[in-house]
Length: 423
Image (cartoon, rainbow, N blue to C red; front, side):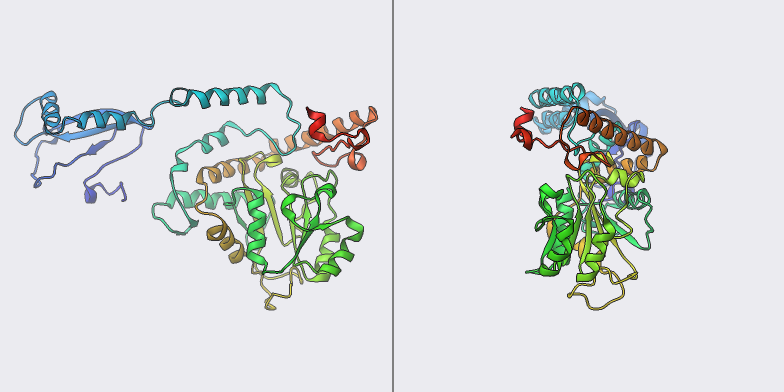
């Protein structure tokens, strides 16, 4: 129902700072009321934090007070007022009152984050505006599909938010919207990665990337022991998707080398830039977009947004034989868009989290500012200062230092695992 069409539905409802009349019509033939103000009574209350006003019609011709009318209604249904009070009370209690147990735990976690030093590279702190969006009424709306093609109605505002998020995502990384598309709906980067696999691979196809000790991520599947043997292994196994990027590599990636290998075997080159996406946006490290066909990322970590995933994909005419696998039909156009979007929804996910998409749009707006670039520059300086301090104390670092925000301390010479050392 479109609640703005009061004349058609007989209902007037609005969430505003000032009370808006809500007409409750009796189930009886319409009668024309010449003096509406004298024939109705107002009742104000709060619901979901918004002040509302109900305008109730009095019995026609009756001059009785609102108390009398209320008594009549109670007489007709003794439980009506109690049920009405329960409905109005629902949703108006703060968390500390509604669930003190969860509230207390959340307060403890807030203090832990505030008082501790977070050295987990995949964590960050979002701003208040992002948290406001995450905790907003947008979580109420169900919006399966993409802007302009939703399963449910009433998504005109949701569409506008997602379109803004698309535009800001492309702008944050300096991408031409005629050459790149984006999907901002994945719930995580792992979901984003599996959407790419689902959309582009057939049963029996192979993917290849670095294993975790070499800097890869668990969601990258197959394994190659290092850069020198990458081409040899790729020629042997002929993966349909070659993956660069990962979660534990503190140096610059040689995307050009990966591109050469991908072109030689006709593979799609995909980059998972989850950890370094903020550095890429701030131009503080080499960008994968010049070489890769598909780029995935988290939306938190160094990007400093809400937790989630994002997929960038090439579209339009192919500039070279990028991603020309044996399953291609020889088309000169990239065909990633429809396949990836269908893989995200309905193949792997349901409706997107609209509160997350709005929060991501807010974070991406911040990414485009000089303040964010200065922030990422300081992040790199901090990581390099930490690496230098550890090296001065004869600590062994993986690769001997860092080019980004990651510092990997090698504890194997001590016979320790990271979890044991932490405890």
